[in-house]
Length: 207
Image 1 (cartoon, helix red, strand yellow):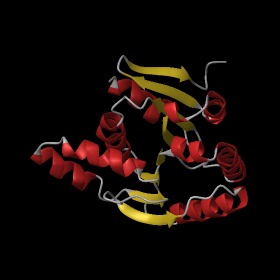
Image 2 (spheres, one colour):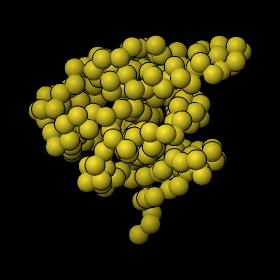
Image 3 (cartoon, one colour):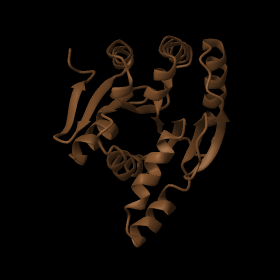
């Protein structure tokens, strides 16, 4: 994996308010990039809040952690202890500090209220994070596509994350092409992870 390319986009090209969509397939070991490269990079360069839908991020975290040797295991656990986590739906919380726990909703008005409450909590943190990372967003959309996308558009349209860079890991295999297209349209940058490397599919300065 070209870590320098990831770093160039996440730390260099992506500005506050931008959205980075990182797509992957079900057969790709995304935990090696997400937890092995991206999360440590963002922690060291401004900090992050993780929004974990249905515990997908936690499952990926544990898969990654199991493969680490002793010293690296201890160092990694220490590194991520201050990550703030928003849990949406069931799932264990074996990393970071839980900032909020939410019941998944597909009602746009309820989603907006929850979204506003979460943004308010983030804004009141003593040390303001620079990044907002999600796991399982594609799964959330998959279970109720129309209402999920309406809810996301309502939330982002009314309360844009102008102070944060949003990074969404999305399993594109669980989404219909039209649903994925909506997420890609509102993203500033779109990347695709595969065994052949990282491909940039969309960037804002390609006009």
